[in-house]
Length: 127
Image (cartoon, rainbow, N blue to C red; front, side, top):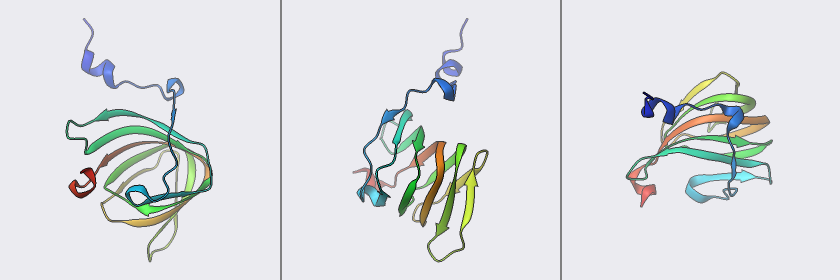
């Protein structure tokens, strides 16, 4: 007997077919500067549409924005992150992060990244 719940959430990253995503230009507080490769796949969306779990790939560029509340794990790549008013640091393959809603920062994507993410969108953005 197959455990449907377990097989539903098993994922081999090499088998993911990334869907092209539109480059955000200020929507929901996020702007990607340039025209990098950008895509991903949503793995789960809550019934209310506020919680999203997925995988994302973004090529070299600069991204500025305000986090909606995100937990992430980098599978590939490297970024330099500079929080508003803070010191820069690097995130890359094997790094786990949590960014509470309202954190503003700039990411310089130095090497194309692939990350798993879970985002919970505040109610004011969900409407």
